[in-house]
Length: 203
Image (tube, rainbow, N blue to C red; front, side, top):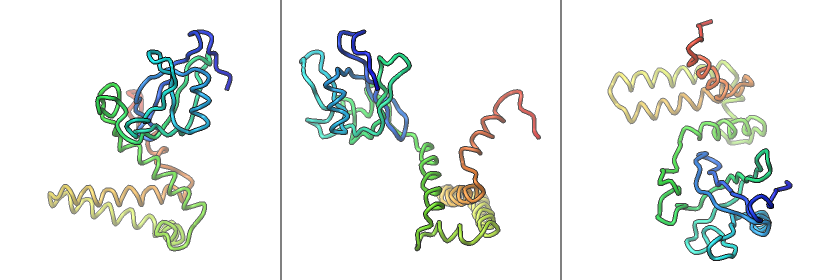
């Protein structure tokens, strides 16, 4: 990574993004020393333009930003740092410096997909997911159907909390079934995205 620090007198902007929710958390500035410190410690460290010194985010509050990945833009003069925050990022106590809530539960579906794929690769003993893969496609498909029926029952009964519970079971088993066929929940998302296009026609 060859970063051009000359354009802004030795500094480059560093955009910090939550690695899980993909929310933009804050913007800071780094010089070469700050970048090297960030890489070596695994904690986001900036150059303070007012104090003229390095400062590690969280060094007083404990709300560190643990580095997951560092990327450079196409001009090599801006950094995108994906991190896991240890608490609120803004000095005001807000999750982000734009006073947004750092919450995006839908992103967990991708994490769950990766987890299930890992189970499929490793097949650890004692895992319920492993037992599903070992049971075969017919049984996995049957489980999806059973959980779908349970979801319908709870919806008709007006029990919202149980509907969410059973729908969660259904989605989990659906991801297992998709994974067994070499597919993923992202394939379903792509199909839905295509259908959202005004020009889409049913096959």
